[in-house]
Image (tube, rainbow, N blue to C red; front, side):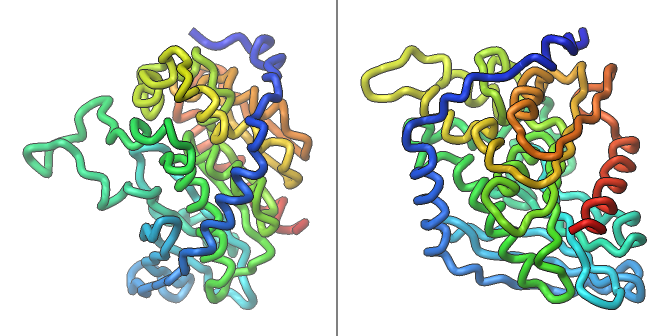
Length: 319
């Protein structure tokens, strides 16, 4: 059953971050500087090497974790604007998008920390499909200690990715757009809030935002890993709800000053529409929402790709 649009439109969560929220993230970003970037790239001789340059890339991030991905830079005169893509939980990086190369836009696709080849599925036969509903349990650990929680590392990886691409040959370091889907939508939101290099944000069906009991009790994705902890009664030692609020992307919204494009599927049971609007309604920037009344978590598909492309061209011309 589709969510009620009027109810979503009027969703404006209370602004109640932890009292040390700003200090937590200032200190965390400072910690990232302790880890050298140690970037590497290997040119790939496939596709059209006349039209574009492709390379497998890696760089060192928070906790000395290596992040992997690939980058594609059109062979056109001058440094190219770039889009950095972040996929959803248990997802994987996608192949280069032809329309971006056609429009002279570079692109970087990354595997999230402990994803890609590092994501080990519980399969007896490597050719078996991934078990339906399976998740790796990354969110089940360290919620009692926000400084060691998985989401902190993911957010810091976004800043390291920005640092990597701005130093990459052929890329215009002043023209970076972040684009994320699902969990990746909240990662892109963090990057737009904490990096002055970012000129635009696309958050497709973001879902680490406005973390209510209703959103977290959904039996999907990372939510089914967190909810058993989140739903525990508050104790003297651990307040899981308070700890989780350090990572709720709602509280990054007021820092974002660049144009933002959001999307929402009104029948999405993973990224619940009220949660998306909870984040969107706190933005104080040029913002727009693409709504798909009968779509779920893959809201828009090719239609959204076209909307995104128009957004890239608009922002990069003005940047």
